[in-house]
Image (cartoon, rainbow, N blue to C red; front, side):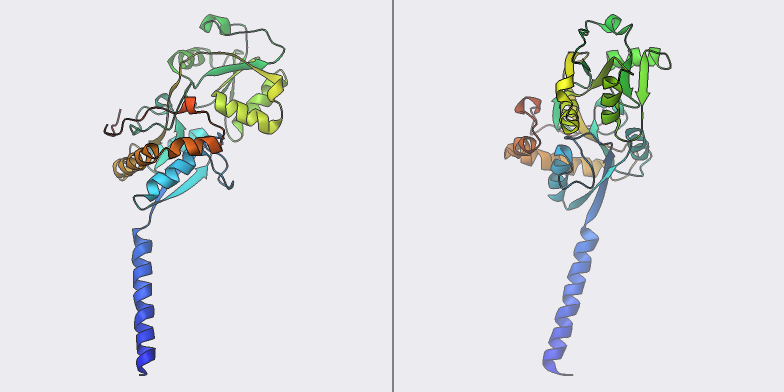
Length: 273
């Protein structure tokens, strides 16, 4: 065999072996959530959302490749709980107390800001003030202990209008503006982002909060065998980004103010609550 041809074959085979080894080492991590922009947006968008961007960069540092799925929230929780996928994005601990949460929450915000039409003079005072209004909610969302209990006690009555499936924030806004509900509950950054895309932000007003700001996470499956290792790698990568000041840079790209950024303790361990 021609010596040059022999060397070319050997070189080509070597490249194939290396490429195969690299591909084998690429580990896919699948996380899911419903459309909750700017936290997590459409999986077909060039910018898939603040938390998705962070997760992709943080996990890549440990050799993981992120796969993001946009599905209804209740389905995302169910699939992560049974280990079909690795985790969910945009979770408060009340969403899934059995999941694995890291010590690196990506935002700190109220899950239960209340909104009305601009002409309304209703304001939240206490749970008692919710009596007599029809509240728009999303199935499976965590709104904090107080509001969760109120919803549990009144679900199925005329006091609660519950949506599920796709585009729930947009649909809740439409329901409010069309008078089918009187008040809707949502995290403020998501509500205002969505309202601006719908060009209806001037038709809405804030009417109070039932909870103070809480940590918001990417949470990992309690049953997937790789969850602990993935969570540890994620936490390590986020801390590196935090130390470099890149979390706020990514937040700026989505219009998220610095006031929503939690303080991350660099030396604290990842724990399961």
